[in-house]
Length: 483
Image (tube, rainbow, N blue to C red):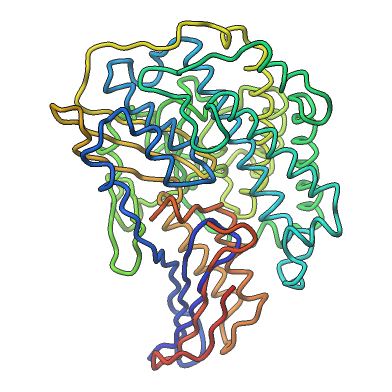
């Protein structure tokens, strides 16, 4: 007979989730699951709509990373309007999209680290729940809190300049972009007074990274061992193996670094990636077909990206990448909390890329859109802040969407998040019959490392609505905690 613990809702992530933990008669953990309890059905909503609506319509999946859905949909429609499979746009069209994308990365990573993660680092995962939040950070470390707010503000300004507005913009259209960047717009973020300019953001991104590295040095046991388990990793890579968050080939490596998906064309992703449905969650479980459902799962996101790419094409981030890789002697890094380290290296890369792109005169070009022979089907793939994001559409003879399939970043991380919950549950709850606040937060810290967006996958700032329920061996509720 088993006992059962439920954590519902999970806090400080986007969306609603529930964790159940089953105990045996000796109160040892025998099974843990992260349940996604919302059903949203966007793939069905898209059916019957004109295909050109998709880049704007699908942004409504999410208020945190609408740019990622906007661009993934636009890339899929590039294929449908005959503009190529990701590298066929005009220089202005592609670089405006890239600038929009790196602005999104910069603001999203800053939001996650400063607002959602820093309270656990500054106050400890067992710190007073009354102060272990962004308000507590603002009270005790106001400079850090302000820096987080200003970094996010800068990223949002980049999005506004390229997409027309900060949330749910309209910049990307099938085959290109609907505007260029004027000199005045460029200088408003490139040459603005401190701190809201590109150079200062590079400096702040480096400072945030140094903060984490110093914390890691003083807390190696916690950072290195918390929710550690081997896995495969998948992401886009540029044709020369470089980190590319906008376009490339699909690559996956196993936990030893062997390539198990060798730079394949993502237009053929259905040949390589399958999706399994389970009765206890609305979120799908993707897997690599040639390995199978049981062992074909993989991680995506910052940790996965730095495990699959060969190098980072900006100087400061590349220097940090080399330090990061040396920590594991060049082998894939499977330490869950090192996702924050990887995420901050990407934040630095995004800041460098924003500065490089702003200085590129192609942004002032007037050749914005390209079209060719219409196709009936297209796949758009992009590296969103939380990981690899798939948009796949088919259209009918009336130019309406007849099939839409989305595999969002958090969905790709479904099985790894379940593995993380199980790891922490066994570490903190074996032999226990009550859920303490530190136990509950430890489970949430493991989930939070993936920066999940549960709304996209099937949102609350300061709270990740997760309930934890504890059931005994007779399936009787013996304890419950929620946020």
